[in-house]
Length: 127
Image (cartoon, rainbow, N blue to C red; front, side, top):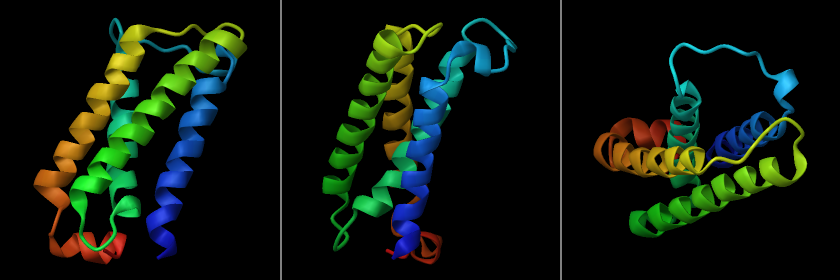
């Protein structure tokens, strides 16, 4: 039971730390233009995949998908707002928010197609 909540909470903490770290504390590397959008996309894809099992009760997946979508969207919006308001050297970007939302929708889709009702869902997430 504990494992269902440990991973999404840990990933949330990672998102908060990375989102609210001042820009001078983050290594400056660029592989291609707008590579940070790919990072946002991947972070929120993983976040939504980890949230779904924690929010699934009695195999009611639709409810967990909607809650994952809501929690991830609110998290993404809040992190972008906090960057704009509180973090020196960081700016809010609507494209970052869009990458977050596309990432979480992708995560929900991946869970639906590849994880839901598979044997390893029960082994890993204890559903």
